[in-house]
Amino acid sequence: MEEALWSRLSRDVQTEVDRLITSGRKVQALVLIRESAGSSTPGIHACVDLLQWRFERLERLSD
Image 1 (cartoon, rainbow, N blue to C red):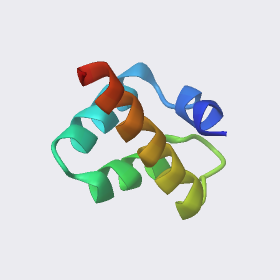
Image 2 (image 1 turned 180 degrees about the horizontal axis):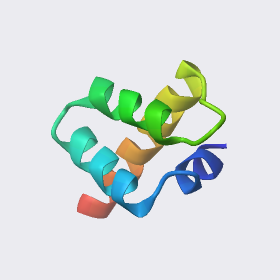
Image 3 (image 1 turned 90 degrees about the vertical axis):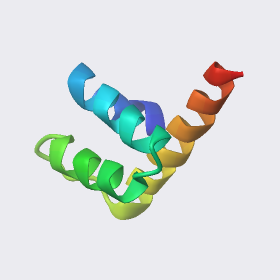
């Protein structure tokens, strides 16, 4: 589910979401996801799940 939502975001938005997550600005990342996901705005829970998924992936990449 997270990957499907992630793929709906443009590359620029994905980059910005990652930047916001790594700088501890998760609320702003959540808002950006909801605003940028296209015609069907995802729910809060889906966005939180996506943020957790990205956070974990970014942590693994930094190891």
